[in-house]
Length: 216
Image (cartoon, rainbow, N blue to C red; front, top):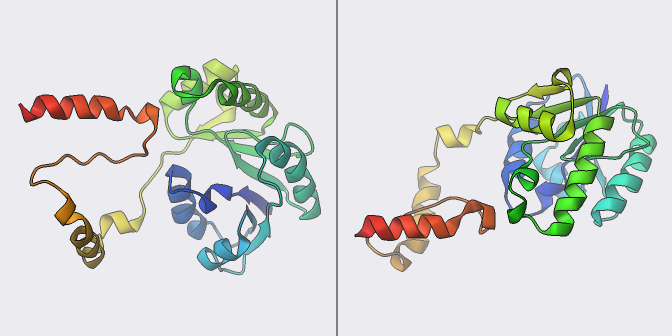
């Protein structure tokens, strides 16, 4: 089988899907062929160099044009049997679409998402979910939220729990020490570390308020 995978997030800031691709792609069974689509094929080839991977450049970054027009043409050109994408995909032109939808935060907590992006996601994700052959999500809770928001049958949604890479099980002590030596002089004796992007939905102000109370 020849499987196309949209991994364009790997060229951007580090986030959950970047961690997903870094840890998952190398474990994909070699009896299939995988067409990896990114903005920088040289970078993805350096990361995933096995013979069962092909690397192609996504020529347009504008999301709607890229997903609805360019991907169907690339899938046809590259003779992919399946296309795997995140959150939403082409509504036409792809016979076997598989979607990964980790969550529907933009619908459950609309106040944390810009209005245009919320409308874009809600329409395209719902239409894509109905057009997809299968949907993958990370928990039973997310499955229920997807089912309720998009009116999708249970049988179409598959829960695949996330896992962590081996580097989390065997920390690089030298790497930790090198990074720590760069920042230790800039930190107070007591501090609180919170991991996440500076994003409204991460609720950093609440962390700051709790920290202030704990300090007392």
